[in-house]
Length: 88
Image (cartoon, rainbow, N blue to C red; front, side):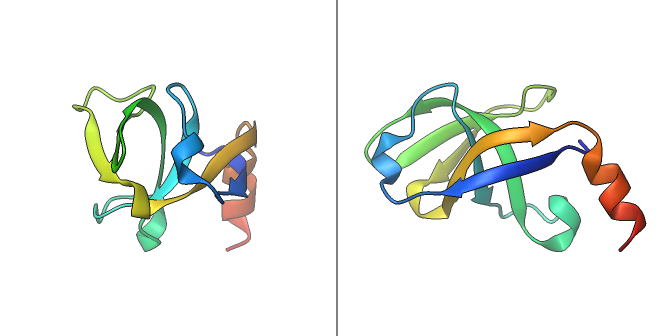
């Protein structure tokens, strides 16, 4: 939470691997200030689905469709999101 993440858009979504951190369109209304985006770690993949779970989440794993994936997180800047939020 409050980290600024640098994301590389996905060209080949079949190259998503366990432990990658991805950004995807979420159906949850609680995610990322109504943008509908979520950032989570990949637990497993198959031909059409990705199983994700947040590192600090006690929630169950979530199954998402590969079509929902926007990109992979390349790097993150801890707490910078909090500073950016001040200027919104």
